[in-house]
Length: 156
Image 1: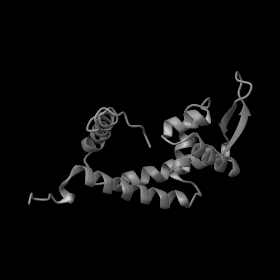
Image 2: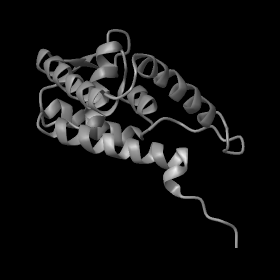
Image 3: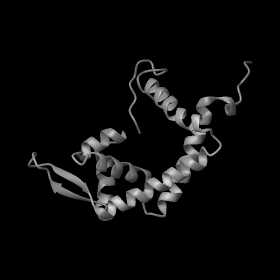
């Protein structure tokens, strides 16, 4: 029988555990603001690009337009975003982050930064600078068919 490697020694397992642990910490912290990670992501995308439609946000987030519509509806119900008529497309609406939504976004981002800071507290400045680039490279390779027999994968 072939020897089975210890999962705790495999990079994929360690990354999965790290992502899961960080997601739990961020989810708990954001819950105090009545905000989810998905909602935080949508607010951040909208502040960066207020011309984004629900369909575009869905593509950016790797979810269906129906799921994104539910997320946007929750943000609207909390007065974090409002729908405005699109300036050049008569039937489309533009989503605009309200001042209240911008304030909650800033609070949420601070909480996410705190989780990241706590997680990587033992890293050297060089390691903290290098890690995002290494992860981007690995993610790009994984999404563009590395190990997936040519299938392109999308973001979640």
